[in-house]
Length: 326
Ligand code: MEV
Image (cartoon, rainbow, N blue to C red; front, side):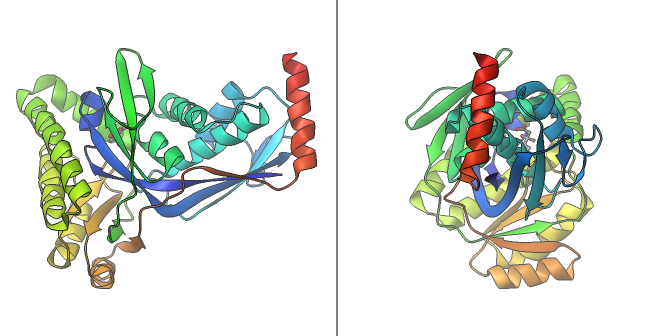
């Protein structure tokens, strides 16, 4: 009755450092997670019962953010899971949008907030970068001080993240998926234990933060040579934090000769690299030859979109939920 779709994201600069009070710059990508919701006798996902192990994000959302009639969900995705491209954020935002809409509370900001709430509760330590990027589409800048073009501010504990709109840049990009899963909580924990015991880790995080501002300037000027150089530098700093892997390095070696710059994107450990290039087919071939899965991508203009397929059923559910509230 209701179909919602949310885009993948790629962090251009600042992953991990954003968890420690530094800025991050992310763009959405033209690969999407689509979720359909319909009334059902039992809560289900893709025909199977809502499972603690297989459907952690949907299950958390359903148990904590929904009190209305029973729903089933059907998912379809062109974002590989655990690839560093935000498939769990896109799922969280899509489910958040569905439940908020059926509660009569749908807004872009509300989707970003509920999407973050879902991801945070399932993953533990996380910033709202991925979920805000997927909700808004285009690009976003996350900072600890509000600036111009503020979209919303999200608080958790002591931390407040300010999320800003960035126009979708005209960049040619290739993602190289390593086929090795990137497990965000494991990588975030790994960085945390290094950060807690090392001044060098703190300096490295500081340096990543400085580089994000240079990246933003280069992005606004459309200077791909500068951007590429900063991507390489950001990757070297992430290597110091211990989140690269031989699979990532192999794909960077393959893509490097045909790119302005390459870096891991997302939590690392596995997942994907991002190559900025004007020879996307050459980069794709090179990635494929080294065992990776290439995707030629473009920044997406659309964030979370909502499409009502059966307005009568939607109205019935809206009335039931309003009735429960009243
Ligand atoms: C994961 O895509 C990005 C990290 O910075 C974690 C986060 O911001 O939640 C590693």
